[in-house]
Length: 382
Image (cartoon, rainbow, N blue to C red; front, side):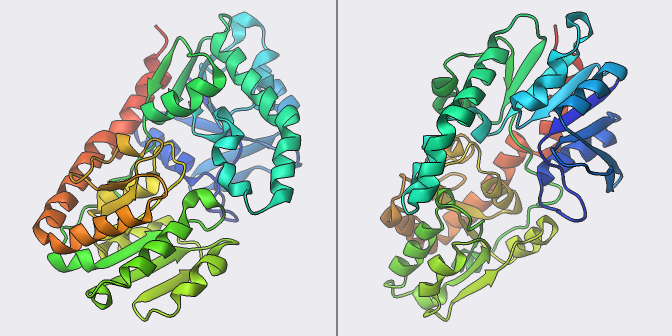
């Protein structure tokens, strides 16, 4: 049985962050005895690359079509699918088409205006999005709807959360495929190993987020810290903010007045995150848009108590006051109250920390997710 993954990007030594979660999947598949070939769709002429024992081929849609005609794959896996990536499947005779698994992660199957707040301060970006509405977004929506409803394809869809499916994808696409599964993105509990927290750890708060767009809600993090600065115990708290992007300096400059707020500008390698987690007890991770909230899950796996917003897929993974603290959308005051609660209730903080790690491992731990995915890939066609 041969398996092929077609994706829009894959990590290399030159770009470690390019869909690194796909590489974690492929390595886990290998450990389970499932070998998967990798093709990255591209318009450039690129030589094959090798990364951590994985052979990566680069092809355009026509090369993919030729490749599929001379290589018999039982199943083809798609991540961030679009019409060009699917072109090679269309060129095969119907009786030669492989089984197909499509992961739906986010932007490829949801309305562009869900992230409207990213355009509020930049008219040029809004104009660009409106221009792409007819040429990019509408055709993509029609493509997803088409492959969800065709009876000449043996195709199954994987949504990363139930709420992502019901809140974002279903209303946008307008149909529900016959075959689908809800399988969460991996929270690597082997990398993000649980470490028991002490009462003092609740006073150490971190965030590790991109500062590239407003949906990451780093402005809320800044406002939360400013409101906390009015608390008598504020100087007992320690904040460490990690991340990079065009908004980092703009948003964080006002925090430089506080001696207990440390700014770490730069992207953090995934292998370095567990060490940061060990040194903290609360993960401050507000959000305006999330299909799951992987960084929140990774923090939970390490034993941190997440403080975030009850939006998108997040409430599917965090139970308020049991495994984390949830505020309503954009509500800074509620987030401050939640941190205040954790500060004043050390015993509850410790209990929540242990329960967070236990809960996320059971729901989205490495082996849990990989076993479900392999079942779909190898046996999900009856």
